[in-house]
Length: 348
Image (cartoon, rainbow, N blue to C red; front, side, top):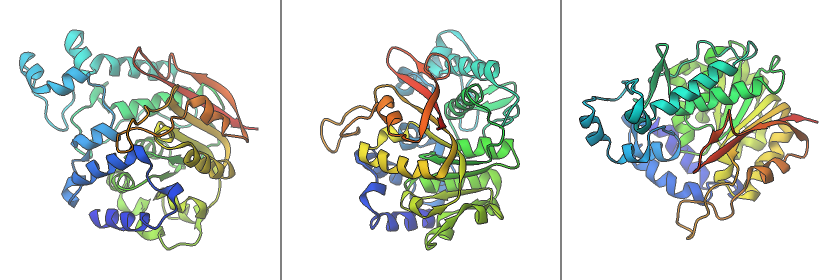
């Protein structure tokens, strides 16, 4: 897998600037690469500090993150990789994130509908050696996984999702949405477009979850002049591509998804991606982003964006789609420090 990552990094150097990492991710890539020096490092990617800072979100309170060992000793709790956070409420539940995870799980249960995709048996794979996940009804859930489940139930409550088969995502992280869709429905086909090194991580993750013969990876597509989705579907269940390959895609997707990652880019980069998304997407767009945008970098090397993009500004970039539903109080995140909003758009 490290060889695949090196191949992606080598090709990224010569890619158009619109498909290269912007200011926010330049710092993130350096940190992640330090944690992915060998194939063995991929096996525990969910426990890397860099991953938990950039693409493996956690529920834990910042106090727990800083003083985890002391707090666990105080509550006489032993937590190791691939073991769930104890189902303790109260003060420890607030610190560890259990209380928030339970709330999100209950929202998912209460709002799910009997339409595509069938989420009733969804649970996250232990691949990647996570140090934070929770058991509800003997099934595994992380924050990333529950974010997608709530997003999908929001979609189900907004439009008729029957008939969705092909799903395109830009910035899909380690592949949680692909895991949900492809383990829930046998007819689903999923494409994730992301920058390296995250594209290599999602390639590893989905090959472990689905099997190597089910994932069309970058080394197979890098020299293709045209990437025909219908032809790839004949043999594979998903494809992991890099951003500079987006103009080569031929085919149609009923659904496009972006959770947070657009706001980690600069406005001109977002607009370019959306121009292709509008060409490829036939029915719906599902967005989850901060209402105010990512924090602005005070210096060019700081983690942050040069020009923040609000979710309203992003939504206006979709000329061929119109908003049919939006919510931040139930399906999104609604707190004093952070508000993320889900928006569903339908093709005009």
